[in-house]
Image 1: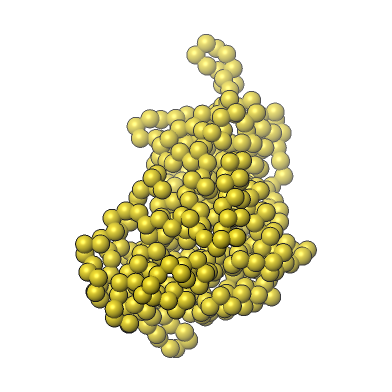
Image 2: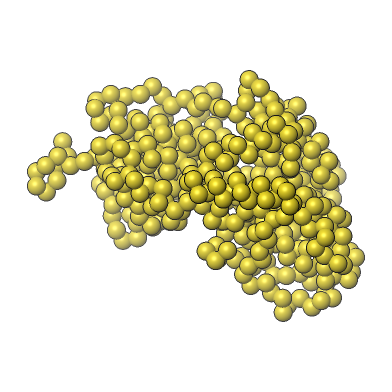
Amino acid sequence: MKVDACGNKAPHEVVIVGGGFGGLYAAKALGKANVKVTLIDKRNFHLFQPLLYQVATGSLSPADISSPLRSVLSKSKNTKVLLGEVKDIDPTAQKVMVGTEAIPYDTLIVATGAKHSYFGKDDWEEFAPGLKTVEDAIEMRRRIFMAFEAAEKETDPVQRQAWLTFVIVGGGPTGVELAGAIAELATKTLKEDFRNIDTAETKVLLLEGLDRVLPPFAPELSQEAEASLKGLGVDVQTKTLVTNIENDIVTIKQGDEVKELASKTVLWAAGVKASPMGKVLMEKTGAECDRAGRVMVEPDLSIKGHPNIFVVGDLAHFAHQNGKPLPGVAPVAMQEGEYVAKLVQKRLVGETLPQFNYSDRGSLAMIGQHAAVVDLGFIKLRGFFAWLFWLFIHIYFLIEFDNKLVVMVQWLWNYFTRNRGARLITGDLGLEAVPAESNGHYPQVNTRQPLNV
């Protein structure tokens, strides 16, 4: 039995690393348990990542989809929130290191997520940003709207078209939603805003390596999504591999044919890799990791040989259900976080739970206004009703009520006005470097200033 300095029975200490869906849902589920919870995150807010693409395309502001962790957990009196980054753990002493501070734990839950992967071509990130963080979304938003501004000044028709060509790599939900949003932005939202260019001439190319977009969905829904994208003017190219991105040129391979695409705005939506904590866990606990750096977990989401260390969310490789790893989506992380929280409470009274079993309640993706696809297993929706369902689900799962209200009002306003009020270009714009008539391009600066927008 664990006792404190006075000889009293000390509460069981649960340390949660990461305030994403997995970590936050674990913390909330432990909010009334007879344990002491410490949630550690390097950000002071929870980010609703499924709507991050709407920040990147000017529909929403970062604050609309972010919730302060202290506010979300303020009613959980057994929970402490710490701002910091865990870079090391000591499983023998049962401590995690935040800077020079060692924080003890009885149970450790690691939920540090994943980031985008360039499949060994990390130098591509300079030319093709991904979309995982607020900073990513703001940088992507900067590049998208700066492209239209640069095209407005450009007198060379070839260079102007390069500015008006957007290439999106990856035909999963993020890529599909980005492609649809940019196409609607060009043909509807911005069509009256410029004088020297016709934004309807914008080209949006969506590149997917497999034979269809939205590979996890049923084939008929993939076909519906592709048809909807083409209806918006998106050029969908499947069975297409990107072999190089450099100097405003995207080199692709389709079968034996190699092509070059001129585009000054390339966006990455293909592939993810685990956070660096996967490597730390591998080195300190002997855990196995897959090629993406995800930690191979036991049926109860613990690490082999360390029953008090759990990994949930995108960092976990759980393949005990059907032989395939669970997808890196929010519902998986939510259910895993809640499961581990319940298991911890069961163990404290000498009980246990059956192995984790993910309940797949469906997949959904937005293509554009009145266009979405929803696969609930027992029923498949497309078009207007799928779009309404997509709106409802995303409003429902937003963490705080004020976020739900703000997003709902913003969507209603956008629906009736076709306006996107968060079309801000922030950071160092590099305007001095680009004359009005120029064949150059704006510097690809990375704006790390999410707090003032």
